[in-house]
Structure formats: structure tokens, C-alpha cells
Image (tube, helix red, strand yellow):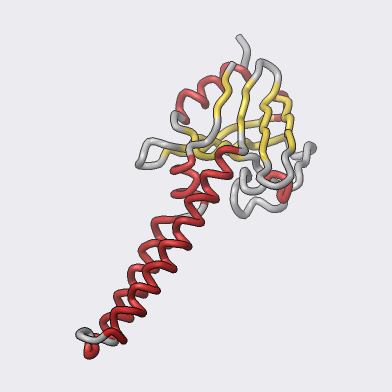
Length: 168
């Protein structure tokens, strides 16, 4: 009924928190520059600034690359009977969740138009949190909730999931 993959920029923004990380690094570099402003005309000021900016770029680039890697290794599919999650950056695996075990779903839409869907499963059916990571709702260790992350149109996917779970 539907098949898709997360958007890499949504994974980087909402899972890996690249924007707050960039703001933190910008504040740290600005603080360093402000505290060493007496030496602004010397090479002792500008060479550490360049090194810091290169390191910041490497870290942020690494996080963006990781977000892209997570998105490329993930596929979600909704059939008339189950939700299939193919995931795993290092150890690929497939998680099949029969729709009869889905007790509810919560759609969350972000300001950038992307979103995510958290699934509440029957408490008798348990999945391991670590197996689903990072496609699991944060801090739901005792009752892990699978999470479809980085959806470009979460409303449409929610409607497809509702139609599949509640056949008329």
C-alpha cells in the first residue's frame, strides 16, 4: 500500500540534532574569539580559529553523513497486513509488525513539513529497544514504540496506516 524511506535532512535535523549542535559550536567559537580579542591582529588568533572551524565542519559533516547513511539503509513499507521496517546501518535486519498488534499511532509533524509516526503496540507483543534503535521512540525502554522517522508526508502515511489497520 505504501513504501518509503526517511529523508536524510530530516534524520540529521530531528534525530541527530544538527542545528542545536551547530549553534553550540558557533557559540563556543564566538566565545573563544571574544575572550582572545586582544590578539586579533596576530596569527596566534587566526590559526586556532581556522582549526576550530575545520573541526566544526568535520564534526557537522560527519553527522550529516551519518544521517544520510541511516536514511539510505532504511525502508518502511505498509501492506494490508503488516508494517515492514528494513533497517540497520551495520547489521541489516527486517522487522515485521503485524497490524493486528498495533493498538494506536501518534503522528508528529515538524515545522519543516517532515514528521514521524510512533506506533503503540499490544503490551503482550514486545520488541527489543536496541534492535529498533534509532527507529524507536526515545525513552520508551520498558514498552518500546517503533517510530517511522523522517517522513516527508507523515499525514499521508498515517492515513495509509489507518486504512490498512482498520479495513472497512
